[in-house]
Length: 225
Ligand SMILES: [Zn+2]
Image (cartoon, rainbow, N blue to C red; front, side, top):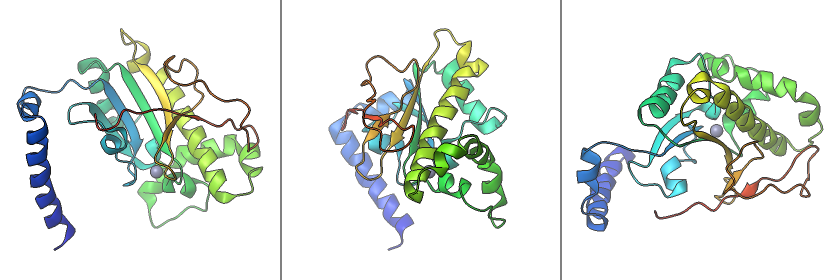
């Protein structure tokens, strides 16, 4: 059986189980959505927002693209943000990157003419890498270098997102969170981003194993919710 057929069968099983576990679920979904969180994440298949956070249908408004970039001149990104903030009135916006990100890794390598749209998309990442060249060049391990740029990228996207008029002028203003998903252990960690939510763990300052790097703190994400 090919995987798409399997997906349809799995969907039917999921719908039955979801209904068994919460008989009013689809009745509620039919009435509309009221998500509290906008999730901006990478399109990578290993980082499915709802699964890694244990969120249920209706709880996350999701936008995913290559390397979780927030691009203010991109209508796709901006329409999602605008709808989430102005219409759905989300209280929190999560930018979630991940270690081992292929888009981030590509931005540290030579341009690939075979994928011009990807190259166009990751151009801001190349600029970001250039801005942090000294720090990145000091990291000998290429995977660690990629992971550090993934962190820097999340922080940069969170900063630009928070400064965007849609977010900045919103009343009440949604909280912006900078998170990174570790594909090595499945945990989400908060990155040191000013005005991070007080409820999130404080950030360690004595765990540096890379120049200028502070180890992000794990977040306890409710699972199975
Ligand atoms: Zn990625």
